[in-house]
Length: 455
Ligand code: GLC
Image 1 (cartoon, rainbow, N blue to C red):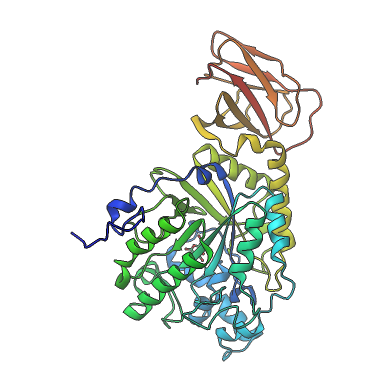
Image 2 (cartoon, rainbow, N blue to C red; image 1 turned 45 degrees about the vertical axis):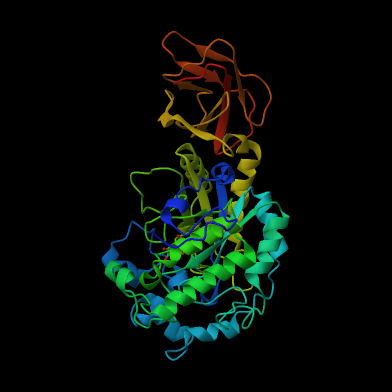
């Protein structure tokens, strides 16, 4: 039995038993769409070969053709491969990565402008990389001067963005790289095994990570604590102190599943790396292209299409997940045009169809195909079933099988307010006739309102 002071007013104690009583807060389940931001020293070189999506490349090759630009330091430590060749050409063989901390200026960065964009495109939460694997910190940490307040931009990026995001009514979360900090190791990671073992293994580092995480919690009270790769083994016992302290400080906070398996509020999926089976709340994350950090090498052919992005959000939500869509800003603090374009396209769609996304629940079925051949997804809220229809609408109707709708039914298309005609037969087939004039869209949402919805 541990020695715990039960006289304290804190609700959570540093035991797994106590931490496991934390319930997923409603806001997180309702939010559905968040924005991840990878911004740091790696945004200066902004280089990686755009080789493909995580999960589609063999692990044996991955690190040598790593499309993640935020892995720049690891990629140049390999001393072979595309990124290393680029580094030699552009900066020279002896140019130390840490020198980017004097080059990075973020001279055009306006956190309020970012936050306004995030609100306009419909994001309900934001997660910023407070410290990524390279170890550079975006806040004035008491525990290192290798940070953005002391060097480079000379600003408390975490603090300024937190304030700006909150003033737009959006939740603010922080990412912290726990298991990896490349200032504490000098060997590159070349394989999946390295990812597990080429980590800082000292008590000094474990204490450092613990102190920094506590500092972030106390100073910024993040609504999401997003860990990555794992937590230092030498500090394994610390985690329950961190989580108890976190929930006592931010009772409505959530933690992800990358702290080494003991506790999570939600699971994460990254590109094609899947979690199976998915149990409980989960979050899909990916960049707009193949990278999280800005990769100036990426063109339109490497980034997700408008339709692909909307379908990704819809499919994720229909299956009970949230989408944490990443942007990789440029070193100067602007959001690259291609990324902004996708964000706005998603935002425009949500503006009309957000009712079928936010605060919905998965339905009995998440997807199917209409008789006419359209891919459809389902979400559900109260007495409303939302049918999200992709593909061409040439046939002007969508016919769904195996739907029970009961007697009094109203069917409308989001964005219009006229009732739609439909046919419904004994065979439980529902055929909805589309209005004559509809505004062109990547996906149309049909709302079926009925007291007796079943399928
Ligand atoms: C990964 C990567 C990383 C990225 C992240 C986002 O594990 O190492 O660069 O930050 O996950 O999900």
